[in-house]
Length: 402
Image: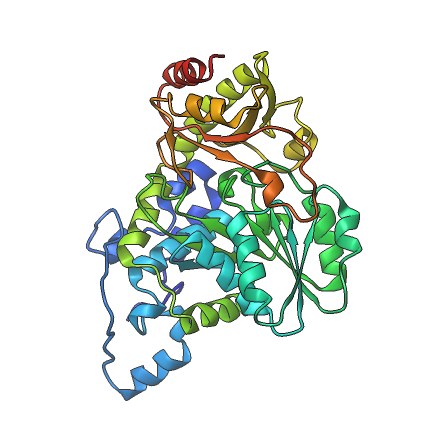
């Protein structure tokens, strides 16, 4: 039986911890000499797991969250991904789930009960807000949204029942960056759990656990998998108590990613650094061109020095990725939609983090409850892929007549 996190490869673990990030990405979660010398962890498919005798069955029941026990609890492929991500995240352990949204909902449901109170950033991923309003409220949980740019917005809403502060930094539409150390300080003083959706930065450019955040969530559908062909979520925690509570919730809700999905996440992990560097470089080049174009009203990219969030971006992040937004001076919805339809390389679609470039018109004002959206016009969110940056620039400029 495979025991999760107890593989006896102490030398390998020490070696992985000592190397730099790019090397760590190639080593994390791999145990080739426990798999006949095979470089990549195999895809293990199973529902039933057999036990040699009743003594082994008893051991398995007691340690079911940390070993092969039943398919829903994970397979060696799942464990390889979880161990690899925990290593990259500098966390205690990781729980793989079936999607980024399931990671968010499972994390929240693990710690919230009737009459508890939860604070969520008003600029967070819309499905997170929808889950809070549609599901948490139905279960009797009180939810408040806070302005991520106003620390007093948090202070004034905390009460004795507040159990969680949920952050997303930067937000994946409008790219506000929260002063996370200030939020963490408040939360620790009040013994409130902190959770962050770190999908934009990934562990390569920001380490939530090292910063002091309790739980880090990744929509591994995006940059971790990186090929727009996989649904996967990851929850990394700072201690065993959090791990056991979240894992128990995931199992009770019947959530489990398939072994093929976990394998694709591991495959993506190996090239994450190289891909992110290309996303970063391409996106910054295009963001700068848009910022200097007289037909563009505003660019929302936190790594640009003129951006309102630049100081906080420098404080917390070591790099930027391929997702940002901009607004044209042209205000007509019909005109802008016709321009979008003229794009050749940029395709209309939800999500981001794959190799391909995407565009999506969005309306933040409709989704805000506390943090007022003051900008006028349609916000165009773009994900800059791995194509040649000159081709992408030409495509944008011909379609939007820049």
